[in-house]
Image (cartoon, rainbow, N blue to C red):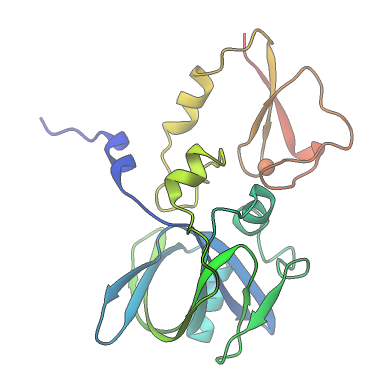
Length: 224
Ligand code: FE
């Protein structure tokens, strides 16, 4: 009988990207690991992006988007700000350095190695996600730094895969739970991004190192 071993999916390699667009005159963006070149002539690339993302609505309505490849130097704060919060609630561009492309869209310019401007050419409904193909109308290298791979994000940065990501693995959280070897009986889990802290109590001014959510967003989890 055929079986599905989800851990086989971990052999797939990806990069880390911020996708941005505009909705109702506001710049919006999020993190994806699914950007890739698909054809050379014309020069096209694609992303798979969750339908619930505010940025997805922006891309489909405007018909254009920007992509930047993240550098290994990008901090978890930076990634978390774009990756876990919704553009519906906050202005993700408020506190970062950015530029405006020829097609009029804002994109981050710090901690990035390359930039691409795309016009949507095709879309495919994948149920939970839209698969979006775009023609690259502008691109440039922004730094000589090394691009961050998805495995670097996981292994070096300690990053997690949120439920809306294409590569989300429902079994991964359970494994992380089992790997805990602390003698403490209490941990706290961020309801926004899933980040976990082993501690009896969190300080009042605590904020999630991964997504920035405050103490109120942490739920208590009994380990014992
Ligand atoms: Fe968090």
